[in-house]
Image (cartoon, rainbow, N blue to C red; front, side, top):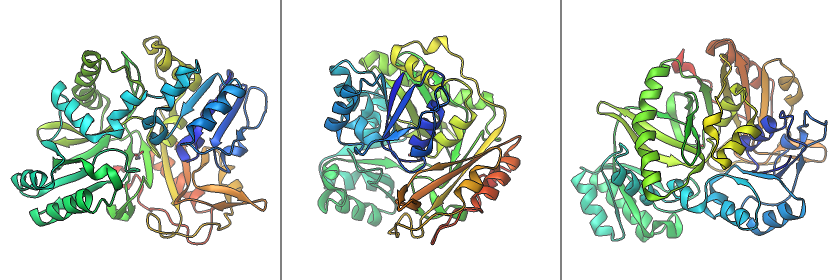
Amino acid sequence: MKILVIGGGGREHTIVWKLAQSSRSTKIWCAPGNAGIANETLKSNNSKVECVDIGAEDLKSLLEFARENEVDLTVVGPDNPLAMGIVDKFQTIGLRAWGPTQQAAQFESSKIFSQEFMDRNGVPTMRSASFQDPSEAKNFAAELGGKCAVKADGLALGKGVLICNSADEANAAIEQIMTDRTFGDAGANVLVQELITGMEISLHALCDGKTAKLFPSSQDHKRALENDLGLNTGGMGTYSPVPFLKEDKLHEIANAVLDPWLAGCAREGIDFRGMIYPGIMLTDEGPKVLEFNARFGDPETQVYLTRLENDLVDLLEASIDGTLDEHELQWTNQSAVCVVVASGGYPSSYEKGKVISGLETADAIPGVKVFHAGTKTKDNEIVNSGGRVLGVTALGDNLLAARNLAYKAAAMIHFEGAFSRKDIAAKAL
Ligand code: GLY
């Protein structure tokens, strides 16, 4: 099978690495890929994965490439091409692409769509309302005592959410998003949501339109610095499973969220085939959905796919074909920990082009896999080219062993300015 993976981060490196282990994969391209992806080899025939210089949002060129190369399966990693309708465009010309259609991807691309869907279908969530008029938005924020999240609707590249603790802060956030258009036209509509407190977890479930196969628990570390301080990032590290979230509790939370969500999709004719990834707050009143994502999480993918024992080609095909009920997901009992190594200054500005050393030594440790995110090859050396640079991932017989191994490997990797959080998975131990 000839496969094209779209994207070039740590999530896509992990997906490519896992697909390359399938006996069914005979050729893998990745657009645009990164230096680590270009180093992967297929198990079936020893061929190298090929990176193609096409951006993940250049749908026209991706479509042409897939058609010319007779790609059998295209796997879409990031949210933006999904929101732009890449899967629909591929389907229109008879190409198989994994991921939700543009309509179904609205669970992530439109916060208002998602919130209204939850309200209509009894998916537990917090009080919220959407507005086109700044003064109405301010009145609602005042009703919540100013304690609210103000979210720009539409695509804001993962940004577009301002957390407020007073009416003054809420008014300023509404002005910033709706009047100053800090996040562009996404700020024409805003969602104002009640702030709720509790422990935040995320779920992943692979869907085929009727069945949702739940993944194990994992936890991300969103802030840049130890003890959850510093700015929000795409995620500085993950681990799986989460020891304080036992299987029965995980299933109870998943049922409370996914059952009404699936029933709502059926009722409203939304055929969701792909990964649904809700962010959930565990409150005194039960689980409440904060947001939905419609793709694999990054760096959650790094710990999930290192633990997954199934052939990923089989699962993604079943997700497209509506046959997931024929598959049982199998996971190693081992724990996985991923420590992200980032560029100095991330998530604010940082310098690129710093030569990275120690990659091969770290990768050679049994149980360790170094997934690349923001890397590229320059003059025969691997340099950083993004904020999150590497996801150093390790498997171990328990969380402590996996964590020690991931940090041992991360300590072998060097580039000017590199930093990582030193407390990934610490709270779980
Ligand atoms: N781990 C955060 C995300 O993928 O959005």
